[in-house]
Image 1: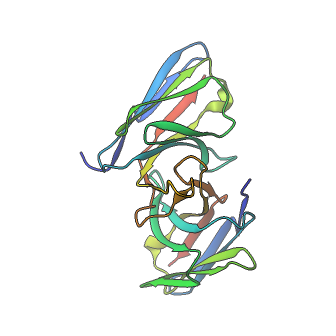
Image 2 (image 1 turned 135 degrees about the horizontal axis):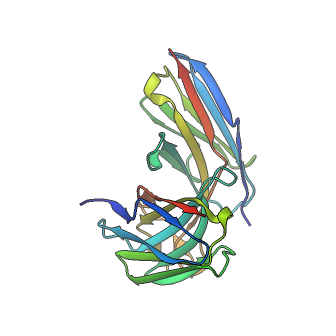
Length: 115
Length: 124
């Protein structure tokens, strides 16, 4: 089955600097890669996603890159702000044989932005 | 209420109790999911329901029993749980597109999974 590895587990950066979180996956059938942000005591919320037919996607200060050959994808946050502090989860989706896709999540990265 | 709701938000139960977690989605989605979130294994998929049919059971112990009476409601029935089952249980929903030609779920424009607020479960 699919296995998703996420690094680092914790990341601390100065406000205004960039943060990069990396994930690798094992199943070449994976075709959808979302990133979720979970603030303390709150539900995970999608911040950006990318499909296997695209190599890069950007949304303001957030970007995601995908290397299908190497089976890895990364989240880039530029000009970090205190409100970016949260746990970030990557995920890889594989098609289910009988219906809904399955998301396999990485272990999460606790990002702390230091003022 | 909009989005995905879950009740109760907090639950404390003994190992011999029977309880149920409820999830309701108001997004018109056709797929619903149960996840377990703990310190050891964040966001671990438990069950998947598509078009009210259970399509995945991720090797979950039988003391967890899901039920999906319609596309808007999902339950997780709990009985004789263990202390290690204490965790945050998250429900999610999404809109999936099923390709009858290939027999595999085809990615549509609405694959985002929307999560509920979770039920914090403590087993004593």
